[in-house]
Length: 468
Image 1 (cartoon, rainbow, N blue to C red):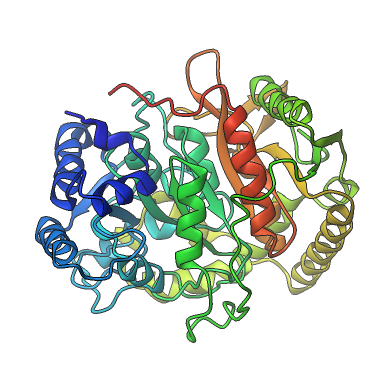
Image 2: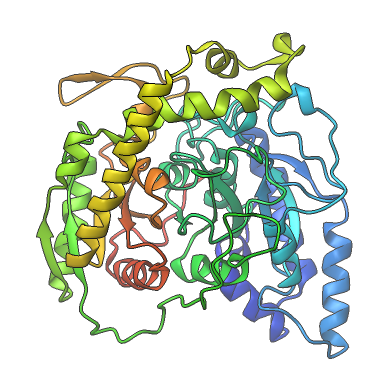
């Protein structure tokens, strides 16, 4: 069951509610009906919020009474099940946390509620948010709404599947190496990972280590990403990385003739990429050039010297294992297979850890130099379109690579902290969405959102939805 409300973006839903053309109750009910209709096949939603309709009724009453309302008043949203939600199950995809109900909201959830948004449901993830597919021993596996035999990505695959299938207009997700951008690419929606620390991690597990973790919104339109970003960004006095009180500027509404300098690549040391993905990136570059941007094919020698995925692997083993040990001790029989694998990895030596840290510094220096010459780096999001479940080693352009290779083009910006955005721009020969990734300089969110809004107007596939 679906209605026209299910595929309107959050911005339009907010306008309909504000002007009385739709009620919050109608909007929330439409999304609950959609969940009942398609979630049994997708398993994207793992917990429904019992009082969502009552909250919607209160929102309608407040509006009718002439009360001051926020920019998302009465609009439903969803959150990955790693975000604490007061009075609502937050189980982190693990039997170890089965039945856990927090007392307080994560900062990001609280900020959405203050804007008038209504928490509708929690979405699926891999255990502890550590895997490229959304599967776990507690709530099971999520399927891609474009093809249920394929993955919607990880670790925010429940969120991406819910939005793509019309069960939610807007969601909250987290990203350690791919988890906001990759799932969006796999399901044909859009997502945004702002500069590291722009959105606090408070109330999201794992609390530590946080230096590569990012929080970001997921939606169907760039204007929704921009709106959510304005509501979510800024210090909260609790996350020591979220300390920069920069005035938020989305860049939307900027001069459409504003010159953009775009460098694009499909390899440059990051490894092989599926030819259809490469062709989609080139098509996006060509479209921007046709629209008046300065567009150049580029290489980034630092990526060729220091492979970001290898650096991430060396650093994350050293940093993640203590967090795993803290919560899994004595519960080993309840752990998902990948969690067990991580727990048994050999430690990175101190010398290799320091060398990896130095290499990351070289990457940051290289990006600083690149963004002196260009406003935007355009590249793939994932190296292949959405893959079948339980991905193992796979072959791309004659080279065999491991499953984490799908994140080789996203992980550089977790290491360096740069903002990056995923948006659909193409379709594979077998009908799966293909996305492109835009990255920009630190704190240049306005630039990346401006470029994305321009590219959205040029997209040959904007507004397409899966039939399920």
